[in-house]
Length: 175
Image (cartoon, rainbow, N blue to C red; front, side, top):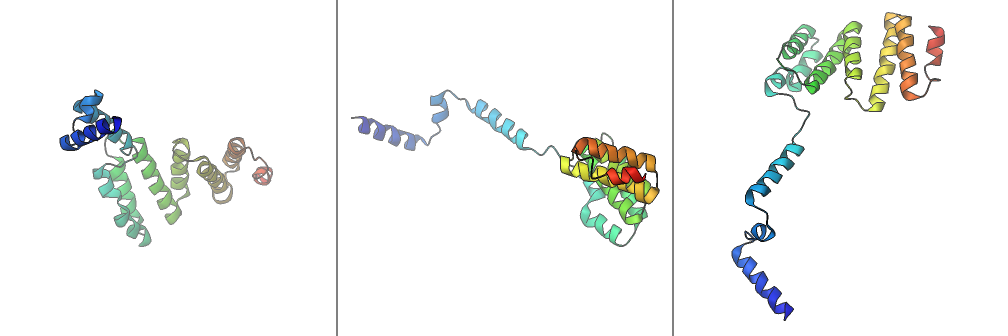
């Protein structure tokens, strides 16, 4: 007898086309659409660059500038993008990444340090990346700029955040 009921219910649902299932379960179409919108909003990328900014910093256009050592044009693109109103934290982070690239390519340590420090303090880096960047900042202060006080500060920060004070100890002693 129960097989007969299930067969009839299956045939009815097949004939109706499962459009009745939400009504039978007490779920309205608006409620289902709201859940779909919430799900889509949750899946929407939080880390996105607006099209007007991306147009200026498109890697397909900016990489050839660095390769050709056209640092002035590259800097102009970064500055133009940075002048956009209401930069999101992610957009600022991306612009700082570009400043690090520019600073490294052009040998501008001040630009590199400023951008690296902003990236470290942004909170967007994974811990291992953050430690590498802290180590790099300390290394630049130590080797390139020879500002040993700041190098010690950054090496100590590395030791504090990593728990490994032995790695940078030799540089701290030499400073």
